[in-house]
Image 1 (tube, helix red, strand yellow):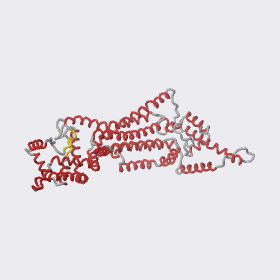
Image 2: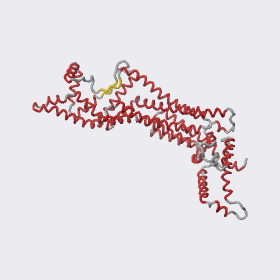
Image 3: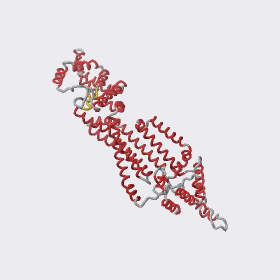
Image 4: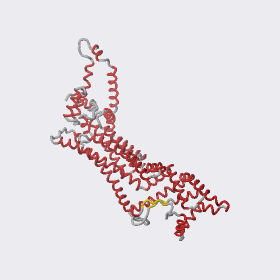
Length: 528
């Protein structure tokens, strides 16, 4: 081999630095070899005649099919994880319910319900008539209407207060714990045969009654309905008022006994799918990357875009499903804004998961780009090569510190789960290992600071070419009698450097002879 080629190989110059950055050219397959593929072993073994058609079929059908299947499973996996965390986790449920009551539109809609509930249980007009003087008793009806209007004005303020906020969260926590006891097989109170899971709003009704001065009347009515004469009192009231009173006030039924068995089966399925589907999706993505020999970097990049697609699909489904659910369940137009707010708050965890998937996808695409043949990626690897080679502990500690910082910040729910944190740690360590292996092949002899020096030198040459005189002026400036332009050696030096680097890359086993010939022809034709 030409000594100049050996010098280029030992100088730390990237073997493909002179190759135009084009990920679709044959050199991209050689670049993927440095990611730990069998092609990176440096053996230079050529594929057999039957291996090429088989590899083509794998790349054309199997790998894309695995990516599509993994994407579909990924969408289902994210939904199962969201349902498991949102509906079957008391902590997330209580946090979401607290946010719901803090919403102004929800406070307005709930206030109307509580006022109706309060005045359905208390005959305010009769109570006022019993305490007013005889001459003022005819005013009890208008006064009751005024009290009801006042209650409607005070109710949103009461709901916004810290006492009611805590009572609301406690009521939701109690109902959710009772629900989980039922879904886990029943408890001392509720079971799959008989029982009802309900949300107790008595505390909120009591607080509202106290705000409008009707606590004693409400307590009296409740005591009457709870005693032995409760049935007769209820029957007389129904006959007198001509309405059917509910058996229990302030109770919002969540599940009835005939629905509990189905809910139990769904809960068990959700818990299982929240574990199985994410694991299956990750395995399919990993299998697609493994099978894409010679194109693993491209497949890894496609995997990143699949993650982005999953996140975007979740956001779209959340938006479309929200409109359909609200329009289907809420018939009163004035309550639809509050229902939309409840949907947005209730699916906020799904939105966070979707955004996290997009962020993960971008990180995967960026990692695949960093391992690619583009000039910026090559320069970054060149700058990192000395530190990765001489100080691997610093590289691993840096990545570990970044992971610890992400765990402390917790930008996504996955960073608050020990299993996912361990998986991230393994992936980060594997990425650093692969990057060290790639830079060791590309920049074996590079020294600290050489990348910056080469970058400045290249910028200087680029500036010199831009400020150089036009070819016609250069021809006039040729040395008398020589008949050769002084720019001619400079015009061919870049081509010679490229050929020498290609030879070094071929000798190291990073590219095959066919790829070497293809790149040589590309360089000799001036990139045409």
